[in-house]
Image (cartoon, rainbow, N blue to C red; front, side, top):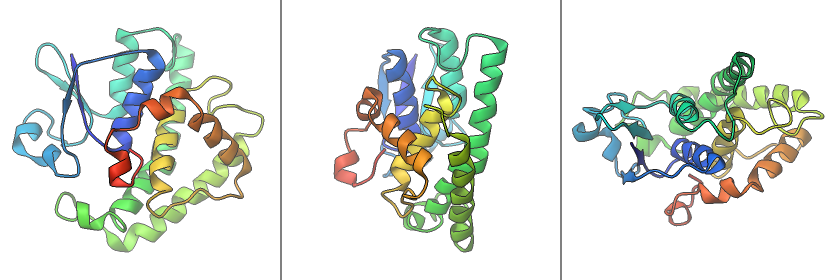
Length: 216
C-alpha cells in the first residue's frame, strides 16, 4: 500500500491522521498545483481526480479522505481515532458529515470560486457568483459550532477526532486565502490553538507550503 500524496489541505488532513496514529507509508508525489491529478495517468486510477488517494497492494485505489482514514483505522486500529464501538464510530461519522457538509465544503468552494478561480476554472465547474454566499454560510455554521464547543476540548468531546482534523486543516488553509478566523468566536479560536499545538499539525505540513505561501 502507498499514499498518493501532494500539497493541499485535504492531503494534509490524511497526513495528520496518519501522524496521530503513527502510520508510515511509501508515497508517490504528484504536483497538485501543476495539475498532475487531472491528467489521464492519474484519473484512470482515480476517476474523481482528487487528492490524496491510497493505492492498495492489488493496484486498486481508494480515494475520498474520510473513507481513506476509516480504512486506515481498520488496518491500524490503535490508537483509536474514528472509534472502536458501533456507537463511537457512528458519532464520528455524524460529526464528520456535519463539519464537511455544513462548513468545509462551503469554505473550499468559496476559495475555488474566488481567490482560487485562476487555478480551478479550467479544472472543474466553477460558480464565481456563489463564492460570497458560500463563505457566509460557512461562517454562520462556525458560529453554530462555537456554541457547541463550550466546555469541550474537541468537537466530539474530550478526545481528538477525525472531524477536528478535517476542520483544522481546512481553516488553517482558508485563513491564508481570504477566509480569516473570526476573533469573536472564542471557543473556535481556543479549539484551533489547541489543534495547532499538536505535533501532528506541524508534521503534516507539506514541504512546499512555505514556498507556496499556503498551508497545505
